Amino acid sequence: MARPASAQSSDNSTFFPMLRYTNCLLYETGVKMALLTWSDKFSVGIPSVDDQHIVLFESLNDLHAAMMKGNAQSLTKTLLRNLVAYTRDHFKSEEAMMSAAHYPGFLAHRTKHIELTRQV
Image 1 (cartoon, rainbow, N blue to C red):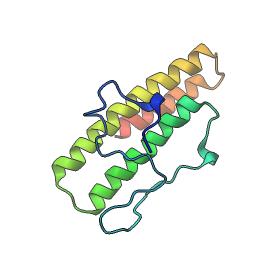
Image 2: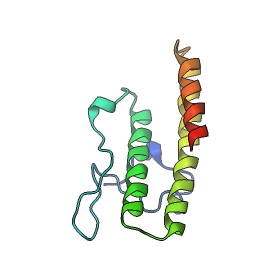
Image 3: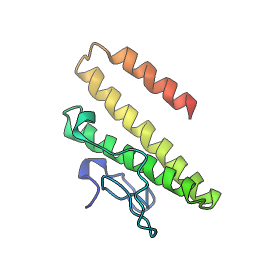
Image 4: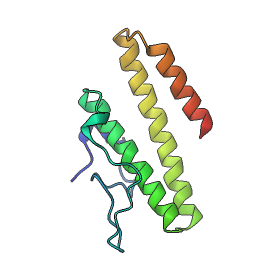
């Protein structure tokens, strides 16, 4: 399956090149190595945001799988850099929607985004 259209980056050739839009990842060993599996219980009910969350899940799965397979540090470094960049873009998009909708929990949610970004 292709990545959701709303989750496409402006430069698809370099942004998450290893991303596969599935519920779990299969590698040449045939072993499912998903750290996180998307389900509707995580849905926020806004398709574009859900699509972005799915991309985040799969990006984390790709990073986890690369680390578990002992792939070269350069691969995990690239995956991590792309994950951080996508996460920042996602946070900006989500915060803009919340602000425009005058979401009452906006400031608290934005604070969580800031804290998470600092941890990485």
